[in-house]
Length: 520
Ligand SMILES: Cc1cc2nc3c(=O)[nH]c(=O)nc-3n(C[C@H](O)[C@H](O)[C@H](O)COP(=O)(O)OP(=O)(O)OC[C@H]3O[C@@H](n4cnc5c(N)ncnc54)[C@H](O)[C@@H]3O)c2cc1C
Image (cartoon, rainbow, N blue to C red; front, side, top):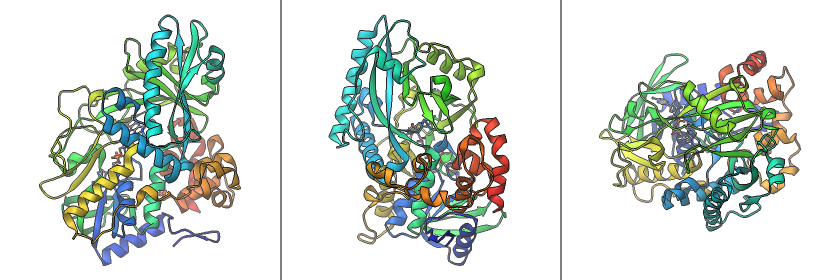
């Protein structure tokens, strides 16, 4: 157990723990649950399994949140878009999971985000009425699942002045007012993955990064330590694949049609310093929108595209010029001073693991081929391969807990005796650092740290000082990343424990600080 100051850290992930757990696994390679993949789905599965008392190992061939889970829009969706397409079940599930995430599981990593849609003449009345109905339905769902007004406000119309006050970058010409809705926002998606993985580690799961699963079967796999090349055979009562868009490498029967979603990164100052999300209709469409998302480090993200990603799967996807132009053109329809290419500090893209075909473990059939990727269901599925591997695919960050519960329930039903394993507990398990939203002022640390670390912020602040990174990220945050959050390399620190790596200049300015933290 790593000791930070005088605080023992049973949830701490670091190089020493990794080595020790690999050695223990070598001595006794029989486990209950092997989870392959360390994105949000794998981390959620590991937490569900470990908190049911099962001996659990998670392997990730790179770093936690190396895949799609760090390229999302970082929203905790209430399911509005699914309501619009008549998918009530998935909309309800989204709203219910948003509720538990924001009120109990991770209030410290989530916050209410105002979404402002400016209304321009002509057509402002029709658009306002259309959006108002949508927001109203979404709000009905919020009430149905019991999320109080204190967590997410009711939506409503905005006057012209209020719209300008909330979104100062918006163009005045033709502006008549706006509509404001509310949804959940994560401080960062990769931080959610790390918090879930650490919570799983606190329940005894071995979370092993830079360990690849090779030759995976329904009852085990050969694991390869990417740092040493050493191989180890593990036997497991159940093997769960949470490999996202790479699921076909483990089970070729699962059909995915990845869809690329791109975001731009601009300075928040360029959006008038606004802390709300600006929602802008895509010209010519009534159902597609481009939105801005205020982000850490004084950045704002602008997303999102939804285009089929053909060809071999890249390790890190990239935006195309067409996508960048489409995002700029759309956002500029609503801005007083248009953004141009020189305002784009960076872009990032992720691949959605959208299911096209395969029978699911509960007998349902997943979505069919031939649809637009934007029409493919965001529903998740548990799929059992002919070799017995259970793949947990589809879904989204917001519903990770429910995906994990369904995955483990399917595993327990198939591989364990009745009554051998307790029922899922994760609905009532707060993640490390969780603290009631209304009491965050009691945490004795800078608000910026409290938003990232919750109740753990004072421990982060008490670490020894050292060289700081860019954008106000302290040496202590980087040290915490190494000592407690499992960062093994500078990229882990800059690309996933912080998001400084998104902008090349921030990365360059932070490399020495990251190296110093790793050498501690
Ligand atoms: C652009 C975009 C925006 C999105 N926005 C939102 C949003 O705002 N809100 C929301 O709720 N959802 C959103 N989503 C959806 C959400 O991001 C994904 O559904 C989710 O992150 C998928 O997580 P995952 O763990 O299944 O896959 P991944 O995060 O891709 O994880 C799979 C992991 O498996 C590892 N792996 C693969 N093979 C092996 C192996 N053999 N051995 C070991 N490890 C292996 C990979 O390295 C990878 O880390 C968005 C998605 C995209 C693309």
